Each structure stands twice: as structure tokens, then as C-alpha cells.
Amino acid sequence: MSNLQNPPTLNTKNPLGFWDGALSALSRELSPQQFKTWIQPLSLVSFDESERLLTVGAPNRFKLDWIKKTFADRFQELAVQYFGKATNISFVLAVESAAPTTPTTKLGIEPNSSDSSTTSVGNPIISVEEQSFEIEDHSKLNPNLTFETFVTGKANQLARAASIQVAHNPGISYNPMFLYGGVGLGKTHLIHAIGNHLLKEKPNARIRYIHAEQYVSDVVRAYQQKAFDRFKRYYHSLDLLLIDDIQFFSGKSRTQEEFFYAFEALSSNKSQVIITSDTYPKEMAGIDDRLISRFDSGLTVATEPPELEMRVAILMKKAASEGIPMGEDIAFFVAKHLRSNVRELEGALRKILAFVRFHGREVTIEVARAALKDLLSIQNRQISVENIQKAVADFYSIKVVDMYSKKRPANIARPRQIAMFMAKELTQKSLPAIGELFGGRDHTTVLHAVRKIADERAHDSQLNHEIHVIEQTLKA
Ligand code: ADP
Ligand code: MG
Image 1 (cartoon, rainbow, N blue to C red):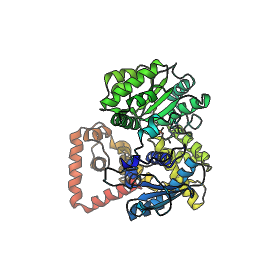
Image 2: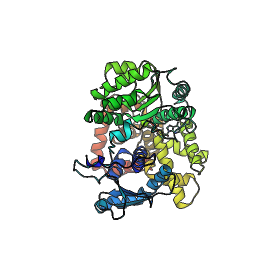
Image 3: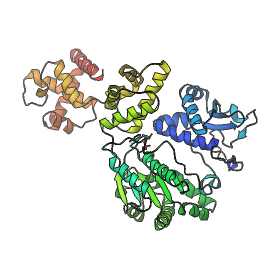
Image 4: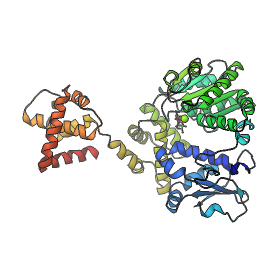
């Protein structure tokens, strides 16, 4: 590969390291769709040391404009975070940037192209010698992910307690530690916290954080370069191996075999292994049984979705640490609307902070509502059957209980049918589930109502209008 012939000189802070980190930060911050559309097509073009100028290429004018408008600040922030001093980022059309005019360090990373001799930065490929095996003091730990910045609640107290225990007694108490849970629930954060803690206590400890996907490509490269000895020497000699999202090993038998040896070597040295996954060991698909039984042989602990109070605490803590305090009432407002995970909360917070900085205002509920307009409207579209029952009952001036009652007078039966029809239209619920929510009615009753109202609506403009109005109140 042409790009590997001139690897940049390696010091601890290098443009590739920055780019790697920036992409992984953005992949955490953005939806996969956004990341794929906007960030992945970018390429790192050049780095001018003397000017401290990083040039990033975008594949077309449209993306270039959008990137400048939307992501330039964030890239700038990440650059300052990484390099610790003023570093500027300029965005150019990738075609133009192919021939840099200033004497810059050519990174050997070309703008995206189908030419197999070039490498897209969306999936940076870094030579084996350069990063994976020889650089033994490169832990890849993110110093910001610590126990101090981790907010505790019911949902994660066990996972946190176990992590602290392991951080204090690596290789002794629980080996391996297997941490599992859904996306954005703090697994990666916790294992970095363990690594950072150990690094502080024992600066000479040989620690390595690696994402399972990167481990897979290391294996591939070691294989291609017949460098398994070096690979083994490196991985088998660690004091602490943190391996993230091991579900990526699924179906990769060569990697699994190699990891099995590493695991055996590490645990017989009393070196600590910590693994994360999106599910618990026995539930993992495409993973060798002997690995699963190893995974299950230490401590297995889960991170759960955060409860309301914890979401509030996380928002307030993160806002404060950004220097823009958020009142409890506002944090409650946001936390009530965003329920799924911490990553989502962080995304919301970032939007609010950007809004506040841009408009020079304080954080208020109105500001939060304005900043989160899109997010909240998505939430609002998730209409529940209960809301529908209430809205329809209100509209026709009947009691909500009549939605579940067995009464049949027309002034009740008809609104009830309308509500069933709307439940089918506006929610993801099945007919039996809807029947259940209407006082345990049979699904055929629901089906009958749905068909009847759909039919009538087609030529009864009054009814059509009424349904429309109710829908509007539900979406408001
Ligand atoms: P996972 O690895 O489980 O998908 P992450 O560890 O990447 O989740 O967490 C997503 C984001 O949320 C990260 O920025 C992380 O720092 C933050 N986060 C998760 N849990 C907490 C917590 N309890 N306190 C503070 N920040 C958290
Ligand atoms: Mg993770």
C-alpha cells in the first residue's frame, strides 16, 4: 500500500492520532446515518507543522459547505483538545487538495477513491509496525473518561462498583470482567476509567484499550505481514487489556483463536482482561464456545438504562463542566423527553449549549425547547394508545373509562371505534395489543372498528375533519 511507505514520524501527538480520535468522538456523537453521510467521506489531506494547519478534504462542494457550517467548530474543538495548542483546520474540496502548494507533511492518506492503493480515513489503516505492536506505551486511553466524571445511579452502581474493585486489584478479584449493556450506557466510559485509574496508580503498567474491530484488523495485518510473533509478544505481555464491543468478533474465527491464546496467556500471568459487549456471554452469537465459557468465568455485570433522576444528574453535571450551568427544572424537562441512553442526552446537551453560545443566552426551558425542536418532535410522534384514548374522549366529551367499558350506546361506541382506528394508524401496536388496551376486547372487534372507520372516513368529510383535529392535538 502506497500510503504505508511514508508513515508520518511518530510522536505522541500526530495528525493520524488526532484524526482517529476525532472520528471516533464524532461517531459517538452523531447518529450512524449522519456519521456515514457527513464525516466518513472526509479525508485528512495534509498537516503543516510550522503553520499548525490541518487540511481536511470533502468530496464535493455541497458537503464541503455543510461541513464548514455544521462541523467545523467541533473539529476545531477536538483539535485543540488533542494537540493542546492552537491548531487550525481548513476544509477544502478533496480534488483541489490533491496537490498541496505549501510544503506540508504528506500524510499519504488520499481523498476517498475506489483506487485500492489509497486508504479512506473513514476507516484509517495504520501500519502494524507503527501503531499496534511496537508502541507499547500507547494505552489509547481517553483521559476524560474517569470515575470522577461518571455519574452513578441505580442503573450502573453494580457495574461501577465492580469496575472500581477491579481497578484497585487488577488480575486478582474478577478476571475477566465482562461488562454488557445497550448502546450509550457507559460501558466504554467505565473501562477507560479503570485503565486511567490503574495508569495513575502504576504509571509503568502496560495498559491497552482496543476496540474489537481494531483487534480484528490487527490480526488480519499480522497475518498478511507474517508478524504474529510481534503481535503475540505485544498482546501477551500486557498488564491490563481492555477490549471493547467484543460482539464484533462474531464469525471471525481466526481472530477468536488468536484472542483465546492472548486471553490464556494474560490470565495465567494474572493480567487483567476486561471485555464489553452488547449482550451477556451465553447470548452471544457466532462466538466459539470455549471463549464464551472463558468470558463467563469471571464476573459478568450489566449497565442498565439510566432512570430519570440519573439522567437529570448527568445533564447537570455535564452542563456545569462545560461552564454553562443548567437548572434542575430544565434538566428534568430534557431528561423526561429523552429516555433511551446517555449518548442521546449528551447529544441534546450539545445542541442546547451550542444554541446558548450562539445566541448568547441563559439556559431556560424555552431555549431547551427551541434547541431540541427536532429531537422533541420525533419524541412527540411516538403517540401512545393512552394518549389517543384521552384525546378522543376529550373531543367527544365522554369519559376516558368509557374507552375500556363494555357499554354500547352509540355516543360511546363510536368514539371508541375512532380511537381504535387511530391507535392502529398512529402506533406500532398490533390488533390484539390494541384490543387489550381497550378493556380486553378481541382483536376481531378492533379489526371491525378499524375497517368501519376507514370506510366511513373515505366519504364522510365531517368525520375526516374530526379525526384530523384530534390528530393535531396529539401531535402538538
Ligand atoms: P457504551 O460504550 O455503553 O455504548 P459510552 O461509554 O460510550 O457507552 O457512553 C456514551 C457517552 O455517555 C459517553 O460520552 C460517556 O462518557 C457518557 N456516559 C455514559 N454513562 C455515563 C455516566 N454514568 N456518567 C457520565 N457520563 C456517562
Ligand atoms: Mg462503547
